[in-house]
Length: 166
Length: 404
Image (cartoon, rainbow over all chains, first blue to last red; front, top):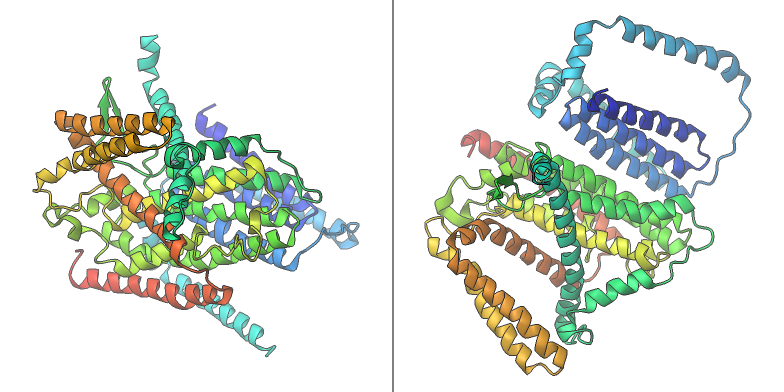
């Protein structure tokens, strides 16, 4: 087993553990902390693939900014321990089979993915900042601008909702 | 034995460097508290610490012993895991960020090995630093929440709100520097400022990026929770804010984390805007290379003179000893020109860091704390627009006049 593979398994286990813990923990702050673990483990995986920039941005944006906001809101609302209800009928009859089918789909997709795609992922060709910016601001500039516009609309909506009270 | 050392030299050097850097940073931290107390005291016409050792110089040692020996009670009703995790996170992240700082231009050649000054030389150096600072807010926020104390909770809340608000300005303010350097690597950023060695300090990023420097420094002070942005701990309103419920060494961990991040911010300011290890004088002025000796020798003599007049016997012994060491170091630098050349980079780097640390203390001695609404409007309505304007202006200027 190469060191890379060993690190991959450690990080992957950490990510899965964090994700499970996120659901199983009863207190929102503990769940949020588990989510941070997932984010950092994912950043580690990106780093392992040679995508340094994406890894750093993953930690700055998701691990830092967004999760700080989550924790801020949880602390501000002083959210208490959540109560677990018994599993609803809909979730039991429809959700579980759907989850199994989804897992199957993903497994089949990975199984059938071409050798070249896997090799491309492993060699870390999606690495540097220049490539990413060319992709964002040249190849996919319209979707990128559209997304920014969408976020702007969302911000304006939030301001309107906040202003309505006075 | 020798073969083991040479074959594993890489790992051994690495471990020794980490250990040495940790030792240096923690010692500097300890004496930074002494320095801060002394300087603030003199600004307020007091003496500051002066009982433990001559001029209170052993006060940090006494403080350290006190932190280690005090009882460490865990208050009832705290969230155990988070309560223990918070100071660990704060300290670990603060110390990690120092690893990315490069301290000098030339590697050290010793015993046939080449040793870089600095532990990790990352391509994404600056981004990695921002990633670490982005995570470091959790130490404070979680400490505030897990203590189960309303003052602590308020401190934690303020800290996370402040962090979210100033993180944006902090990140935007360095984009100008990145555009000028074309790299995230801290060494490349310094080398980009060395393109005109004849200009000396006028070649630094400070002049084209003066707006960026203003935004960065203010936002960075806010990120380190220091005066005038120390709302999370505001001792006059929140007791001690987020670390009210922490005692003994857990409290010390927050303290060390805060001072370490002060050092990191000073390093970053120096690297990005003040030319890192570059001398402020034009490269042709080689006589300025004797400056370390010119500072060390008179200072050493003064310490000896001061020590002889000191009241206590211990001071009469210790101060002249320290002064003699300083004098000898200054003399040695004149005697060995190779060593003198080597320490030029680290000398300027550490000197600039010292100036920034003094500015930190100076601000604490003079500025009142921001009010919460002032803090928010300052961050969102002034810093963020100015830093964005700085990015736009820098980009346009570079486009019009070519890349510098």
